[in-house]
Length: 133
Picture 1 (cartoon, helix red, strand yellow):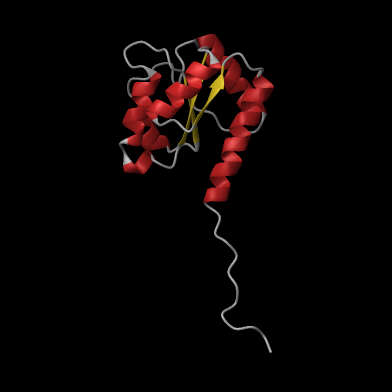
Picture 2 (cartoon, rainbow, N blue to C red):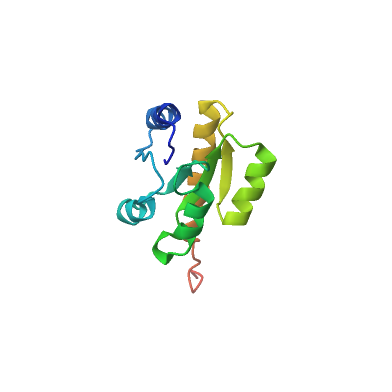
């Protein structure tokens, strides 16, 4: 999770940790791409309005790196939902979560994305090449 608001960072991190997730936090976007290559998280919650490097710019940087393409990136912002939805689409984020939602909904959204990600990596059951007599 990347957010320059330490109060939000702590609250969201606590909610996700209590739900059983391992959470790594960063309070600045600068240096996050390198940290992601090292940590390889499943999901990144990313604030949009941060100093020095905006969240949408960071998403574009993440998407340029093959090693990071399977990471789910969700914008997490106080922007209005329609604006956030358009920004997520434009920058290549997988989705978005408004900061206005209760922490329980944030956890639910992350869980849904984790489920989607896990289903993408499952191999379909294969049929035997020959039916038994």
